[in-house]
Amino acid sequence: MAGKKRFGARLRELFSLGGKEEDDFYEELEDLLIEADLGASVTVELVDQLRVSRRSRDREGILQGLRELLLEGLAPAELDLDPQRLNVVLFLGVNGVGKTTNLAKFAHWYQREWPQTGMLLAAGDTFRAAAVEQLSLHAERLGVRIVRQGTGSDAGAVIHDAITSAQSRGERLVLADTAGRMHNRADLVRELEKIHGIIRKLTGDEAVYRKVLVIDGTTGQNALRQAELFHEAVGVDAVLLSKYDSAARGGVLVPLQRSLGLRCGWVGTGETYQDLHRFSPDAYVDDLLAP
Ligand SMILES: Nc1nc2c(ncn2[C@@H]2O[C@H](COP(=O)(O)OP(=O)(O)O)[C@@H](O)[C@H]2O)c(=O)[nH]1
Ligand SMILES: [Mg+2]
Image (tube, rainbow, N blue to C red; front, side, top):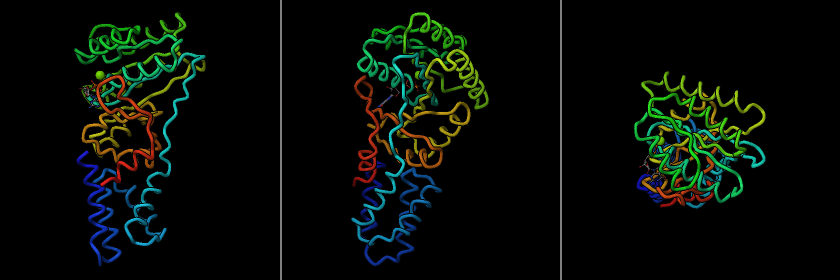
């Protein structure tokens, strides 16, 4: 939380310095917002809007104006899954962001939400040695079925088998893990496009197919570049912000929404199955602005 707190605290420092020229004040406000991971273009846009709104320059007036601007467009993402049909949810993100852990939390969530519908995990990270084992352990703990092959096998084939298996058994939810790491960017994109093509072909109009991008809350501006990569490659339906408990800065959700149109649906706040929450814009903005 250090980064976040620093932002709110420094904001108040800025307010308390009386006698500043208006231009200097807004310039410093821009610096603070950029440091809080809002990105240069979104920051300029926000501060321009704030200036135009011409509220009084007292602390509460500006804070309130900023809060309202930050909240604009920050509605939580909806996946619109449908328990009457097959739903395939693909978890995307670079290595180590929390895909596997949060996929397992998601499974736990839907076990409660949809107690009657069968569920299946697909061990689509075939790249890392321990990844299949990690997901298998979750499947065992949660008591859900898993489709897996060995490390180094073809991820597309694993996901293909998982979907056809769920279809034949009438299971309604397939949660598919992926590897976030390839030898290079082109390999990663090629692999994702291939998986994407397989899922689209198998699901067609019959099923609901969604892609959740996991973003590590401690990452900062780099998260925007990651999101661009995945969104361009296969299209992202919702963001899951992980590790919000550990020194999360998380300001990046604002440019994700404003620059890429990506909305956050969930926030991960730890390593247990209970540590997954629906994204609340109000709580998020309060947290961002807190001293
Ligand atoms: N504190 C915290 N740790 C998390 C969270 N989500 C994942 N992790 C941890 O981050 C590390 C990487 O997670 P993992 O799911 O293996 O990432 P993946 O490589 O994207 O699949 C693990 O040690 C997880 O326990 C979270 O919301 N909070
Ligand atoms: Mg993983």
